[in-house]
Image (cartoon, rainbow, N blue to C red; front, side):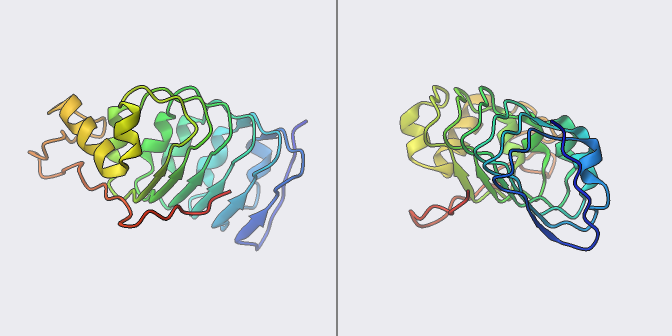
Length: 193
């Protein structure tokens, strides 16, 4: 069942717990000013490529759905800072996520992801990365338990001077260093649903 959502002046849209199955093209009509979109606790298995039309979107909550992938167009969300995709069916880290330049908080806990890609280094502003509940093998679980800085250090050592996918190489020799990831100084987790 595809749901059409028409919003005219609202910037914070909450559609949690509505049994929505698809969030597709017709769903984003008149939503250009939306800054926060809450779609958690639905049955969504598809996000349409027109999500990229939400250029003011800063927060996207898709936790507790049935997603296994995200459209590449999601990487064209210039303002997206918070993405919650906890408790879905991702088996691979969605590459589109690594193309969101403003992303500071990513909750991917409780999925089926086994490896973190070098492209994660693109997320220069990332401060919080939640991965618990994933069967991650690379980097090793002990590295992941140490937090974001340890993960970044591991990926940089593992991939050396290879291009991380956005035109900069990890050593920063082109003046566009990828190392900008910083973890939270405390042990507190961001409460994202």
